[in-house]
Each structure stands twice: as C-alpha cells, then as structure tokens.
Image (spheres, helix red, strand yellow):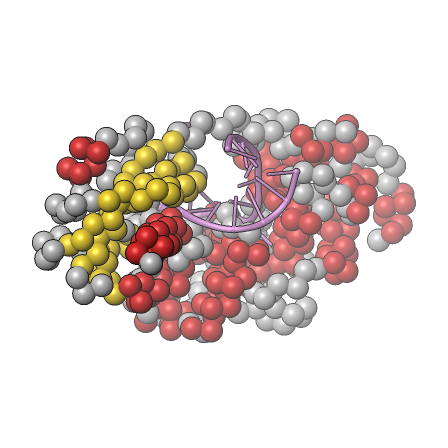
Length: 366
DNA sequence: AAAACGTGGGT
DNA sequence: TACCCAAGTTT
C-alpha cells in the first residue's frame, strides 16, 4: 500500500486499482459509524439500506437520524411499512421535506410485497424500476446491500471526481463525464465499502468549502489540488433567481374549539400533507378585498401582526395569517381539535402558521 | 431538458 | 439578510 504511493511520482498517472485500494484502506481506518450502516463484515439489511438512502436524498445525516430511528422502530421491515396507511407515513415524514419521497417510499414498499414477494431485488436494473429509486439509489442499494459492482454517483462523488480530474465543465453538463470517471475507478472487490468510502470522503474530507486536502488519501493524485483550484470545483451553472410569493392563511376557529384544516392535493408541492387553508401563493401581495374573496368562508377576519416566512427550493413564501370565527359548518375540510393538531401531517410551513396563530391568539385574549 | 420539489444549518 | 448546499427523482 504505502509502497505504491511512495513509488508514484508527482504528476504520474495513478492506476485505478491503486486509487481504489488507497481509498478502502483509508475507509477501514476512518469509516463513520452511522445507524444504518452494518458492522464491518456483517450482512446489511436491504430494507435499512433502502430506507436510509431514500431519507438521505438531498438531506443531511443529522436531519435524517431521528427520522430513521423512528421509522425503524415503528416499521421494522418492508412488510410492516407496506401495511401502513399513506397518511401514517406522511405524518412520520413530517418535517423531513420532499414529501414525494414518503409517497414513493410507501408505494415502493407495496411494490416489493406485490411484485417481489417481499424481498428487495439485488439487480441495479430491477431496483431502478421501483418508485423513488433512481440511478443513484439503485446503484447504492445494489452495491451496499447486495455487494454488486455498481457505481453510486451522488453529489459527493461528482465533487470528488471533478477535483481529482480537474473537470472544469460546469454541472449538470459534466454529469456524464463524472459518472464515467467514477465508474472507471470502481473496484471488483468490496463495492459496497467502496461506495460508502467515496461518499465519506466527499462528506468529511473533500467538502464543498475548505476541503481538508492534507488528510485526503487521494491528495497526491488530485489534479485540482495541484492546480490550486480544488475549492472552486465542481463548477456549476448559475442558479435561477428565487422569486418571493405571498399568501394569506385563514385560521378559522369554530365555537367548539376546532380549527379548519385541509388535505392538499396528493401530488405537487407538499402533496398529500395537511394545511391551514390559504389563498393562492402569488407574486404580488394581497389586497384586503382580494383576500376576503378568497377566504374559505365569510367571516369577520382579523389579521395577525406577524408573518410566516418560509423558503422553498424555487421560491420564498411570506404568509400573513387572518383569524376568524366560524359560526357554522359550511367550509370543506377537517375540523381539528386544537389539542390534537399533533395528529395531523402538517409540513414545517404549516407548523409555523399554527405557532403564529396559537401564539398571537392566546396572547391577544389573555 | 429544465423545472419542480423542503428543510435546516453554515457562512 | 441572503445565499449555498445536502447520500436525487420525477415529470
């Protein structure tokens, strides 16, 4: 191992085998202990690998950990998850974001039961056809859970490859090239460890900012480091501006203390989740007259002073909250007892609305 | 092919 | 405050 490195001249091309071996050696000493990771030598549970990979899509380890523990405790295997109602799964996913993942997770569990006799397929191609499993996740499960030679290319791997080979082409145009470079290094032996090693390298050493090149097992082979441009890679195309949108949320309280909620459409933004009814979220702030006309029912609406601000991926939202008393039924939706709001699958945005409404109404009446 | 799709933490 | 970004997938 060490001799391979010692013999490699600065600037000399490294063999892919040497790179893979060096990375695995590093991983054996520095592997992170994560809840979904099997102990060295132990057989991974495909269900746990799958569950963790779905949760980790575009999501940090720290954010995932409590959700992973809760899901595993409540639904210990794929059959248990398949038997759950979608709303239960959405409720448990509440706050994690990208709720299509929860809908696909549930659909995938049922597909495993119905199409695969309750067992995850080991082939990348078969995995790829399941809901919520794309190119990355299929490769990750095949490699980690089943020991198949597959190259899982996520954002970490793209960054590491862009730096190792000093690829200046911006993402996403560079994706095919980065994938090719990653596949070229993937070893026959220990593909699961290799996949996790590469992601650990990206997550802990080859970080987006201030990469710790001094600790990197590939530092001597890294072209970006040699050129002094590691931190500038990978290049990205400029991101589109994020517009602001505006809306009014209607906090509608009935005489029995219930508040009006609604179920959102099953697809699209916050699909299938529960919400406090709102106006449309539009580019211009609302006039009082326009908002009144958009209310779920006629009432003497009282605007609260605060504002709910929430950032989505592609726009920033500012919600005002209006409070009204419902004299009778006449609005469609769910009437939720205030002390049972925790039973509903409210996304973080709507929790903010609830907090503002409860805070200001209790203060105002005290 | 490009846009939609959440949230929280770091700077 | 504002912007970046994190183990991507779907349409």
